[in-house]
Amino acid sequence: MDPRKAYDELIQKVRNLHYITSVRSLMVWDQRTYMPKKAAKFRGRQYAAIAEYAHSVITSREFVSLLEEAERGDFPPGSREAMNLYWLRRTYDRTVKVPVALRLDLIRKTTETEVVWREAKEKDDPSLVLPGLGEIIRLKREMAEYLGYETEPYDALLDDYEPGLRAKRVEEVFSYIRSRTVDLLRKVMDARESGKVPKRIEGRFPVIDQRRFHIFMLRKIGYDLEAGRLDETTHPFAVRITPGDVRITTRYKEDDVLDGIFSTLHEMGHAFYNMGLPEEWFGEPVGNAPSLAVHESQSRFWENVVGRSREFWMGFYPFLQAFLPTLYDYSLEDFLFAANDMKPSFIRIEADELTYNLHIILRFEIERDLINGKIEVKDLPDAWNSRFKEMFGIEPPTHREGFLQDIHWYSGSFGYFPTYTFGNVIAAQIRARIMEDMDLPSAVYDWDFASILSWLREKIHSHGALYLPEDLVKKATGEDPNPMYLMEYLQEKVDLFYS
Ligand code: CO
Image (cartoon, rainbow, N blue to C red; front, side, top):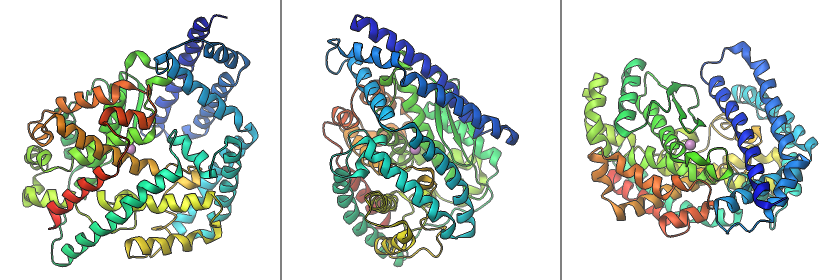
């Protein structure tokens, strides 16, 4: 067959498959928002059927022969066609390298262990979950062997989330961040001891009024509510169902007005990315973001760089006060300082911008050692606590606030955590670069979010997965991901609030 014809047929197949899996995305949204409880049993079977179907398409004889045929074509390197074939080859190879039996074992084991993990966390009892976790790690190591790697098994797993990234490189970036963060944290702690501590924003903030503010804020920033929705859930997420349907979720706490706002801004950042991906590429591999870190850079950019800035709240705080009059008791400075509170804490998802990366570095070091066989699962609780103490100067009083806090490992996600901090690295780098082209603080203050968004659209969103993650960052900012920008940004923050 002619390579061009094979390519067209292949893409048609891939698009159709994507339309089906995008229906699954709608089901996931439903499950995590409004699904009735009793729907769970058959919902699981529905997902399984879709997954089985997707697997059968990708591993079919027809699929691979179309792929091979198309690969014989002379599509220019870097073209939409060439990159589609690159991603499809990658997916195909990674799919067939791992035996189906191993995948099924892993699904079974993680489904089981997630349930046990909930109980272990509730009872604060590591012994319940360590055997299951040990099994998962054994299976993940086996998986790494099938996938292949050059220097260490962990690389094979990391590559799943961040194509092309290697542990050695993560280590290099993280050690730079770690030492500087520890220095900054010392400075913050000294300032806190001499009385520089933000006032806690207390009061009762009715959910309905919070929601009205969130919608107001989203509209002003430019989130298109006719191409998306804002709903409530326990663990906020963003999901793209189709280009015209990109939904976000948030949560409202009656006694904490900040939590919901930053969740909404975070998910809005993900949504902007999803809305800015090229519509006509929907269903093709190049129509997605190239990696989780790049995606996370967009959410962190809106949540932290924009959302925690003085200029942002100079504009929005009077409105927030009008929606929630309790806040008339707090000045703009009180509110801003509270939004930029920095201090050591046990829980990652509640951590501030500065210490957040330490939480990630700790997890990276431990999961790498677990996968590479440098620490045994039975030693995990102690390893966590002693390393935590070394980094933060405090030791978790319970395992619930220690190694049992995140679901990731118990659901089999090893190699995922580093993407969060790489997202922060890229977000800060984008900030540095965007400031060469425009006066960012003024744009935020003037509610000229359209200019900011169009910069991001042009440099990041519109390219989809036409480039590998590092190449995209380089193209957008002029250099490879460089943690220097993140540390400069954090240094500025610390100077602003704690000196
Ligand atoms: Co995110």
